[in-house]
Length: 299
Length: 99
Image 1: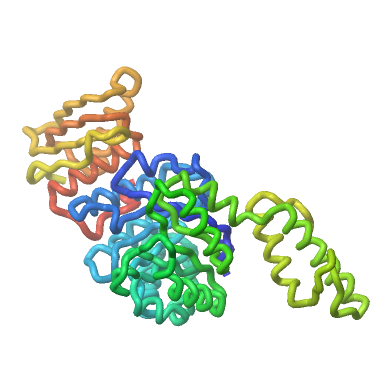
Image 2: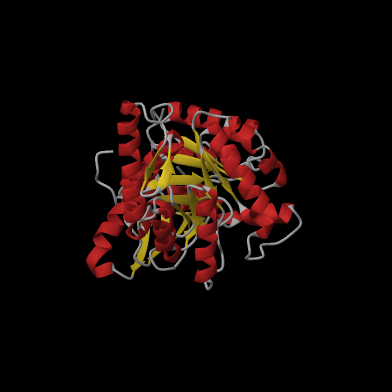
């Protein structure tokens, strides 16, 4: 398995490839991933220009460990295949497919990625894929999309187009996204891949943004698409395990390991009933804490 | 590569440059204006000539208005203008002469 399949992706920041000032140094804001956009943010007549900028940025700018995902143009355009050639030649880490509706969409991109990897002498399998679901049909097919490719590390909700397809609008309350969010996180977990939430576009409503992030964190999402560096610290704060959680998770892991050796299945830690069902969750908190740089322990 | 028609790429926004290529009169004729000419004029000129060399362009009038673009942006804008002048958009030589 590609070692980056499960990497930390709390914040995935969109950047318009048409704008050199945006793509030259986003690492200073320390997002976990950047999504270099060739699609919606780029004007139709500048699609070619964005590719040259993308290629040279990927080749020459040291993004200091930040994952570099490229959002290609939709499969309903004549642009996406050249987008993939350019991205793979540049050495991107992953390709984001917009408007994904079926497993076949993912497989088409997978074939083009493999072809480009061979053409540009990139190790086959190095480039990962994520799929954005932007329609009712895409959300309904979430599970088959999640299972469509061994390169697919996750799915992301794209709320703008999705609500348009539902014939509603973004309200700011999240009520119109509830069904899709719940369905997608269940599908992603069933398939063993990650799940990412849509952008929050009202930059003047940071309280609303915080509530939105708290909601999706509680639902089990792995991270959120973001559009502005100001959103990064809030996402990281909410998605990074707190010291109290880390200490409790350590106790749970140690106690389960110890009690298992003694043949004891159920016991209490800090007054809470604990059994083997808590083990994976505690390990996951420690792994997330370690990846977030707040845990150096040995568990 | 020949410059078949006038083509433009880029902007005059900060960190960008505006590149115009036109059919030349037998040589490379460069008109460069940069906001950082004193510090980086020589380097910008070098990047432009190297990029044109890789693309095998030797007959062009090229005008560059630079607003503090990185080398990678200058390359990208020159390549874009040259390929636009040839109306080439697909199967580009990434990693070959675009490098």
